[in-house]
Image (tube, rainbow, N blue to C red):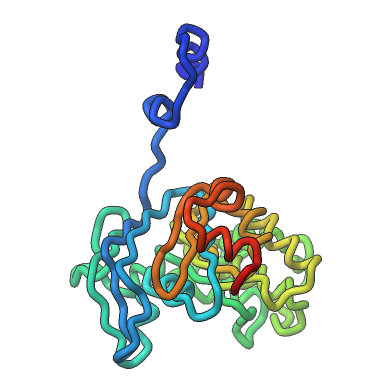
Length: 277
């Protein structure tokens, strides 16, 4: 940053975006989607998607129902392939490697790319076993190590203090907001690089929503987070970048403050202002 300050003090012209690009650090691209098309049988659900997702940022995906938001999210860890009749063309690079590469196992991809769903979905097990389940699947059996993972994950999801004396109770006994943070902790336990969130607060009350939003802001210090949301106010509060989807296309993608305050496409402006959607 000192380089930028020196430049400002010695230059006699106003900095442009191009100038800033020469001095500010460039963030690493985690996901690079190139010309992605997806069909559910004969339905063309995603059309020529080109989108770059950057590390340690929150990227919000907004748009009306049926516009392809969740479909796109589920392509990133290939969960969409669980739906019969799905076909795709194009490329999705994760850290520079195609996620469709035959040498990349789907199980490995989903370990690196965790997912949190719209409705909290804890396992019908104890709080402890919910968190320990993933590490156990990956071969960790040492009780001391599992205890450390459970505590670290619950602390990471800001729920440790609420459940530390209840670890062997059934997770279903937690409130909805606690269950969702437990699911986030379960995701953290497998140490992903990316966290996908599909409407993570839509089933929660305002207080729980606030806690999850605060958690997302903390987690982006360590993880890249992609959030699908119908709540435009939420997207404006929590995200660094926002992509507006409409009819399976990316209409506009930019820094969140520009999307909400100075969109370049009238369709984006109309959606944000509530004219449709």
